[in-house]
Length: 418
Image 1 (cartoon, rainbow, N blue to C red):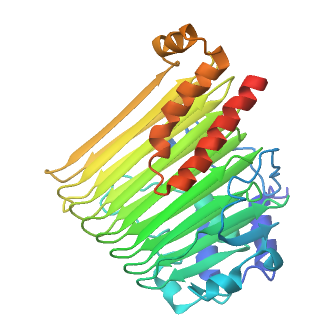
Image 2 (image 1 turned 180 degrees about the horizontal axis):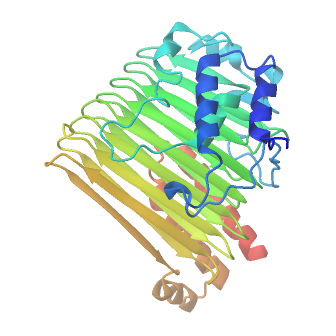
């Protein structure tokens, strides 16, 4: 009797024989071995209880909806990937290379402290090591991406924008080093990637702001972001996700230097049978650090939102300030929100808190607006905008805040028209 075929193993073996699989052969093999040993997650896996993924295959489609690119009008160093490969004619690699170190397919010496250094690192002292099968899948199969070093003291004059297009279920990767005292902004958008993986090191005194728009994803997208934050460094990431059939965003941040700041925020909007999952793990390993998790969900029809957030504080991470809040507004009786907040603390001088709420729009506020002549749909849109804005305010740049607000308003307007 023939052994059953494994489509992912077949896909990996075929990919290894291609020209695209040139970087990190050993890391790729190890990552696929981990994925193969674990298998595709099921509801029996603690961190996949609410997010079924058994039907994901190497041929899973990545169609886009009719939403516009949220960052189309932003002046940026643009890197456009089509079907898993850089479109050089539409990208600004040469322009960015004049102000930063952009590695080629052979890599660069600085990548030794970034590539697979974060993803392969265990969470020190944690009772349970969290497996990341889709991150491993991305590392095994990534066909292209960006590896960039922002030199010490450099303030990048405009954002870097990673744009994902095409119909192929691509796997794309980012490796980024923001050296001491440097600063940069990173944008991501587009449906043309089944998985994305990112490893980011923000050195002492450096700043990185990250903004992801998942407003064009019609089917599935899985992301994994690993960040290491140095002393006096700041890292902020915000994701706006809307209406994807299945979107899963995993973020793991290590607070590695004293007085570092790590902020994770998200705005989630779902209609139909959308399922959007934000899973976060913040590991505090140095003293006097601050972390924030702010997630706002607006769910309609039969859509579902999932938030799983953990704050881990090791013994030496005294004076930690860890804050976590996840809130949902359910616009219909069929909508659903599942929250799993966690704290694991071994230091004795910390200030950590978490909270989660779920409910309908405030009836009193709605009545107040209606009594003053505001139509129902417009009143609902005003209250939703105010609700999501707490997360939007986590975005450092006010211009980018306004772009996200417009996307939220457009989503509510489309809902009202439908």
